[in-house]
Length: 301
Image 1: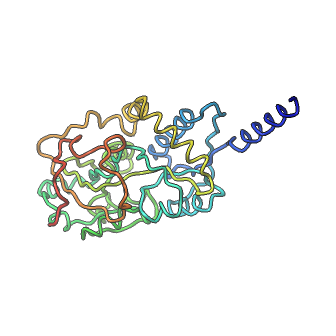
Image 2: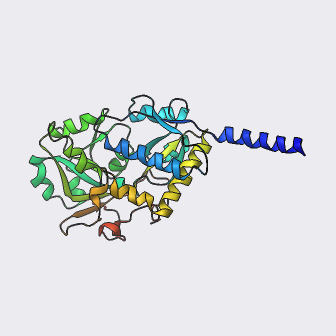
Image 3: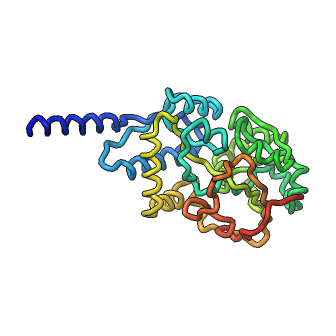
């Protein structure tokens, strides 16, 4: 009997050793003004705590500074980066393990614009997709949004460096930087000394179903399941929404109300996997949450 108990204990210790994760590596912030990095890092930490189920909580460590394309490569390879958050598309979900819980309830698909202050009057007169097609958007290289906007014939120019996008709009070398519903306000505020002519334009919302997910290498299923369990637990006990309502990145958007003069332009997202359940209110904000008609079809002109 003693030998049997000893064997069982050994097996349990072995299993716990396999499940033990001492550290989780993520890339460094894109810049020292990258509020979104702290948002996701703190959300990841909370998910690890809520999904621990008695296990020791891993330490989150930063590895290298890298553009998104490099981070994508490193997560796919699974050596220098264990977790990162990307705007999802079908290819990423094939190459990596997607944790299909939007990290900001799909807010990234509701876009408001960063523009030059001299362009306010011009954008005040834009009320349709056809009118928006006369303007050029600035986006980061390798972002899934490029294909989304181009699929609706919206002109796009790309920039390799994140900070250079703001510089380009400020220099009037493109017309607008479409930012996630929660991003633009803070991004303009923290750069007001560097780029004093940038403004956060809130009278147009360009919507397409889109989300940021946490991704892990496919080889790290234990870690992925741990994060997934933690995020679901946070949703069930209300901690997920509290995180959004209290964090600097997203707190200012609540309550989700629109003034009557906001123009809503809806376009499809052909890059989103067909089985994405973006109508699921548990995980995704819906247009009606912002006061927009849910049954409004994607714009055709």
